[in-house]
Image 1 (cartoon, protein in one colour):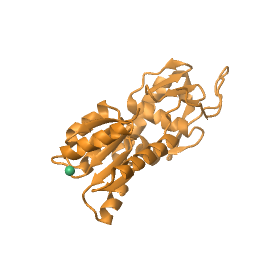
Image 2 (tube, rainbow, N blue to C red):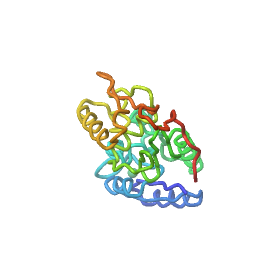
Image 3 (cartoon, protein in one colour):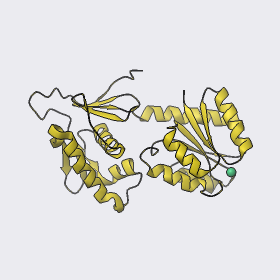
Image 4 (spheres, rainbow, N blue to C red):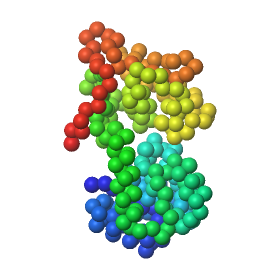
Length: 243
Ligand code: CA
């Protein structure tokens, strides 16, 4: 069942949303302010977040930016809810990278349709099923990566980085693309961090370190075709969902 985090300070609206989400088969998680919402987004791993923009203290836009900076919540879809009705607000909301945007008052029926559409879209793009690339295998539910079936001790950031490279195995991933995908933005402040993480990944990859190639001045590339004798490596395939 899909957990949906509702960050909404108006208790009546939050309760109404929770009731309707429950009736539609979702598991609602409620937060009445941004700080609590952020904490629950990290700890409750919701499949989707409904975010009111007009919140006391930390407002919705700040909450959204914080969500996108955290590797744990970076990919969680967000539907923004707001009382602001100006078309430019909608454009701004979507411009920030929200998955959808609803203006209050909205019908619950429409909200549920939008939620289902966003989840469906996300399902099609996100690797919920195990990803295999050469000797590497990813378990997205446990956020665990295996090399030759032995678990690798990766941080979440290293996991995301390696996963992105695997999803594009055999192709150069340029630096800004990696920074955007793993850190949420592509400014230069994280540029050295990327190189540091690649260095650490190579150490952890051990005998497979050579697969992680540097494309000088451009970015990085992961090879999943055989490099070593005895490798049963194959090109990238995505297995059907085992569950
Ligand atoms: Ca509000």
